[in-house]
Length: 378
Ligand SMILES: C=C(O[C@@H]1C=C(C(=O)O)C=C[C@H]1O)C(=O)O
Image: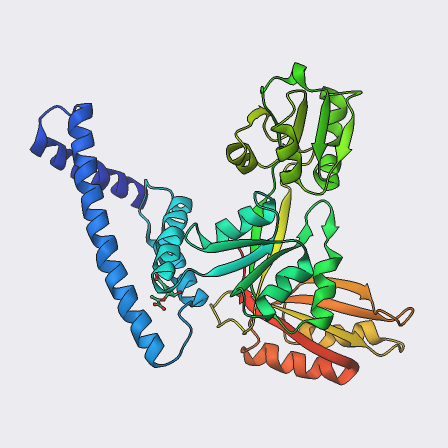
């Protein structure tokens, strides 16, 4: 019923405006109306920017951080929940992400280090999370991303942590052994691979370049559609795209964004063997993130080697009904057969139940480190 009402309201109000211009809507009339609405949107955006600048001035006086992800999350949630349509809610989030990104840049462009080079999936994830007004800076390695944040050269760092088909990226998890940076957000990105070339014609392809992971994820498609064509491993999908710009007989497996960046044509879209291929990225910063109301907490700990320890380390969570969303173990360097555990759970470290469970866990651990509490990615 609500949906019908919305449709009725949308069409009746649109009709009224149309009638005021002409009885019969023409392309020119409709565009005139759109222009008038765009002018209003622009006026409102400027009113909003003035308020954001006032907030910035207040925050400078109180020496508080300008960027507040929990407030941004609240804005996205409220607007998508209240959106009557037909404008899609996914679009609402995208539009407001850019509005907020541009508002933050009014203060000073926010610098975010990511695992480069440009046009890789980490770059796409950084754009998805921070919008186009953030200053996105590619780094050569995962440790270099952490270092840029540690030194204050970047406000945040973004690194991949796991892929739904290839599993965990252990290099990122290992970084938390030495680094005290905190996880401030997680980003989920659907990974889709595109076959790109200069001509866009499959019959011209005599060689395929890519990073070993996309080559592995597209193995079946390649064997069926390009049998006997040499596959060449290179350091990144971006490098593959760059090589292809100079060779008409080569193709690269890379992102759709790489096609627009390097002016390549799409030979075939979405060639991954497994649909629903997602990569999860972590955003790291120097401080803990505030509670957003729907958060996850990541912990890292090592336990004493004794009977029943695996059971004991889970009891503090099970007894409080805390949901564990992931558990991973990694060998403790320099200590054969001793392990570090990584655990993700539902809730924020400021929730009394979560804080108590972590406290109880420490009684059976050699050490516990809270890596961060952050909004759950949707
Ligand atoms: C304006 C604020 O500061 C920043 C900008 C925001 C915005 O454009 O809405 C939201 C949160 C902050 O990252 C605020 O905290 O309200």
